[in-house]
Length: 167
Image 1: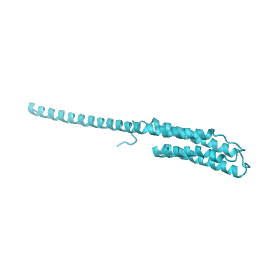
Image 2: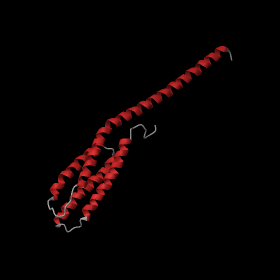
Image 3: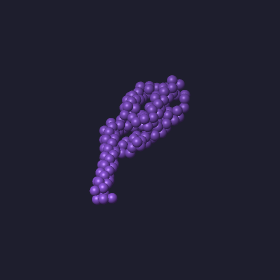
Image 4: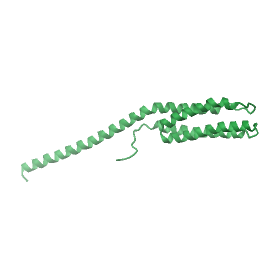
């Protein structure tokens, strides 16, 4: 092999190496930009989600702290503002998502509605039904609230820096 051929092969190897390095650097830069864009998107969605989650938690705690008395027949009307607050907060959470948070919120909302039905049925039955029913529903609300809080914390901790799917 003469010097001319060696120079051409050396230049060709250098070109291919440079092109390969540029391609790899471009892919790495693109992946970094995608991660940054996902993180920014998650950050922009995080604040409204956090506010919606907090409102549902506060509404559920307010309902759980509501005083139920056996001797007051018109408690259904007193209960209504608490349930409307939960309903509004639930809708906000369902819209804010994600689905893994909306499912525990569904259960929490359902138990809140059941609370109203339980109080109403006790009033219709002249409080002959066990007070334990109200306590049981309240305990379920706390359990679903704990599940919701765990899912909400997990969703808020996700900053989007990890890819879910490999290409």
